[in-house]
Image (tube, rainbow, N blue to C red; front, side, top):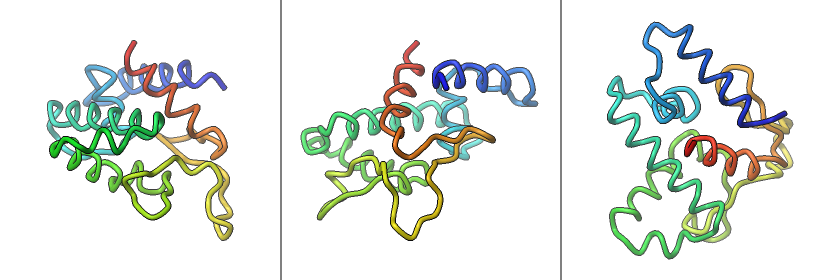
Length: 139
């Protein structure tokens, strides 16, 4: 599966089918991938930017540098506790050093993460998905 093409198809489908279509990729990500409920397009875009920033920090393992700034610290803690990330990360002794969970828990019988409608990503590909999600959002 080409993740960027799939995201583009899903985005275009929502623009065509929705009674309140997203005006841009950030609104789409906020509403349909990150699953924020704001009823405020500006807030959705802000939250989506914040989520993308935290995803990037986790991918690059630069959390401790990032959270030195108090506003970014609060943003990080907020985003890792959002449903989108909270079930996709693991950490050792501190959530501040989280990483994407590619394996899941032994008791967990599901080997994929589910996103907007039918999009399923194998847990082993979660890092690739997150990187491509960021790249897609920037184009």
